[in-house]
Structure formats: structure tokens, C-alpha cells
Length: 339
Image (cartoon, rainbow, N blue to C red; front, side, top):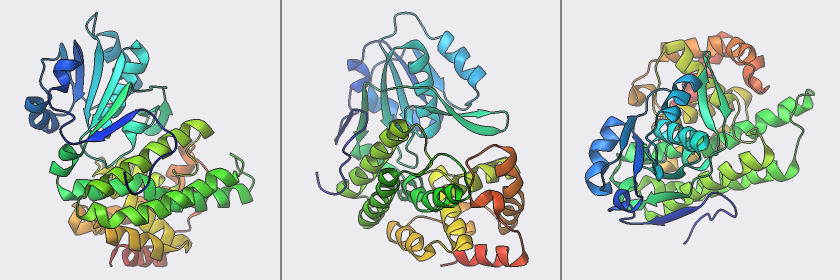
């Protein structure tokens, strides 16, 4: 396998046609998916699940209810789809101890490789749980069948290392935890370099480009668990994304929204914005508001709300908490996305 190769991470297998008939081989299953994804994958996956759950909520109360009501004697929990399906399946697998199999159908988030679930609780995002899948099945044919924008959106949760590392350094300098770790920080730089190398392959949906991206996600997922924090890959860019969802009451593809956050925050802080732009350009990731179906007014509202949102939400200390909002802020944000 060429490209980036993870040294650590949860069990994974790569190839073409891995999903074909998998549902029949996993025994009695509970499948967690999403409507459009399930319509696409069900004929290929095969088998007849004991229960089919359409993932749409990530509140701990709803997830616990789902876990408490799965059929007795089930052999496998199977998550099929994007981040929400992965997180719901992980929670059920963790709560029940049933063998967990994850089938990502788009690489726009790293949820299939992280052990915690990104809960939505009381208007903020928090992480809980410890789900280790029996296997993550990465069927390259399935990922290549996704719209190209879904593939290129996958850079977001790796590109975020660029701004998160700057946020971490800034926070430590002002006395905030967690303490600085040279090895973790150095890993972030390796991940960005790996992403830069993979970006052109993602633009054309090559096997090597997709596999490298998924291996980056796998390594990052392992490191989050090893360090017991995600400080090296979650910072002001993610807080921008969460704030956007809070302000507007809606969301877009997670990876695209986080990439927008990276472009804006790296420009506002002067932290090598050209490096982030180069990766976004090479991967062909959508980032202009008109491409994403959002407005400049929504971006402006998000920036105005960001300092208080990040502070009140108790997120890691970052440039988001101390961002000074001036007319120049909005000029810089526009320039950050207009390339």
C-alpha cells in the first residue's frame, strides 16, 4: 500500500467489493444507517437485519434508549454511513458489548476510527464512550461511488491539525492545559504533510489517495485515545463549525465546514494560511459559500458569536476565545475563502 500508513489504530481492512454479502456473514445484525445510504448499500450488503435504526440524534438519552432496546441474541452491530451513523453504532456497541462492525460510505469525518461518540448534549458537543470495533471495512468501490465533493470533504478532520496545533501552542503559552507534548505536536505536522501528499489523489478519487486519507484518520483516532485528548487536532476551526451549527440551526458536510474554519482561522491568526489553501486547492475541497449553500451573513454571524460560544461552552482554550471582532475580521474571512 502506497502513501501514508498508520502505525497504530483500530482493526481495518481495505479493498474493492468488501461489502458484498457482508450482512449475511455477520449473523443476526442490528444495522445503524441513514435513509439515502441504506437505499444505496442494502442490496449489496445482503442479509436481513433484525433491526434497522436510522441515525439522526446524538443525545445520550436517545442513544441509551436505543441500546436498551436492541433485540436479544444479536451477533453484530453494523454502522453504515457517515459520522452520525458511526457514532450511534459505536455507542450501542459500547453499551451492549456486541461485536461492532463499521462501514464508512464517505470519508468526511474520522468517526469510524475514534473510540468515543461525539454527543450533542445541552447545545454543545462532548465526547464519551470507548467503542473498539471488531473491524472497520473500507470498501474503496463504495467510497469511490460517493459524489466527489464527499471525498474531498474528508480532509477536514486532518487539516484541522494545522490550526489546532497553533491553538494548542497559544493556549499553553497562556497557562492552559493540557501541557505541551513534543511528540504529539510533531505527529500533527506529519499528518499535515501526509495530507498534502494525498490531496491530489483525493481530487481524482484514486485508491492510494483514499487509503492514505483513511489511514490518517485511523492514526489520529488512535492518538486521541492514547493522549486522552484531541488537542492536537481539534481547536478553533472545530469550534467555528460547532458555532455555525448553533447560530444557524443547520449544518453542512462536517469536513467542508471544518475546512472553512481552518481557512478562516489560519488567516485571522496569520498561521500559514497559504499552506491550508494549498491543500484545499489540491484536494478540490469546496469552500466558497456559494458552493456550500451558506451565506456570508451566516459566516459573519458565526464569527460574532464565536468568542462567547467557545468560552461559555467550555471548549479548549484557543484563538476562538480571544478573537477580536472588527470590520477587518470580516474582510479577512472573505479573502480567506475567495481563492
